[in-house]
Image 1: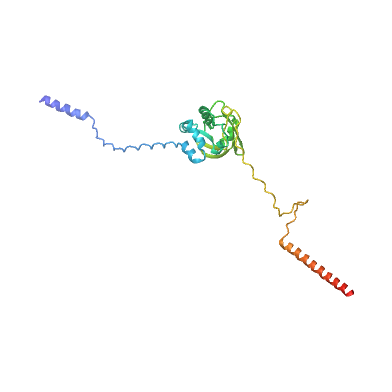
Image 2 (image 1 turned 180 degrees about the vertical axis):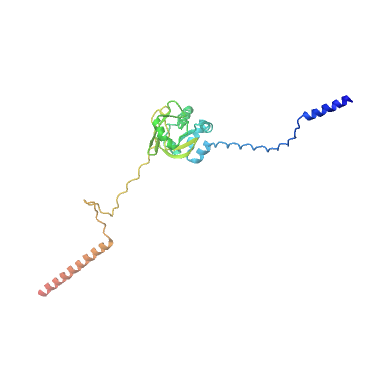
Length: 261
């Protein structure tokens, strides 16, 4: 009995001394936060498509593909922060160069020639004025293959050893790719050792001779106007009247002589 009483007292004291913990309400379920949208993929310019559609650049494009330089240029445009600037001669610019200035070049020389037409960095048209103060500017071909730029009141010329073409149009210019049309092929002496033979310009149109009906110009620079048909008719009428009067007086004189006989 005494043990039972002691056990009850200990149980009561244990319950009394233990803290009463309130059951906390369950935490609300949080909806998962949406993941951020992926960054848009960078816009890459397909140089083959651009040159095929933008103008008469088939000759230059064929050289790019033939020498595998098209892949070099495309990688520079897609995978670098510097970008690329390409000077593209038109088909007529290649046609102006008479063979064998280019046709007898080796594949390595053709590759260097095509690389010579690009800078391994993007330049807008407004950048060329400052760039001209840094002449000569290295090209993709490296080493001795450099170009000299001039910007005269917006007229931009790209000087090579044998040609000094102007930029005739901006085909495409959005960082990191710039493509500019030039009206001549850039020719370095390291590849073309002698001055290229260009197709002669067409002969000027012949000067037309003056119209034969016009009178020659006088000393004071004034020419007599051609006589009109009306003035010609008037002259003919006056001449006819004078002949009639002469015939009349001749007849009167003859008649008077006959009376006197």
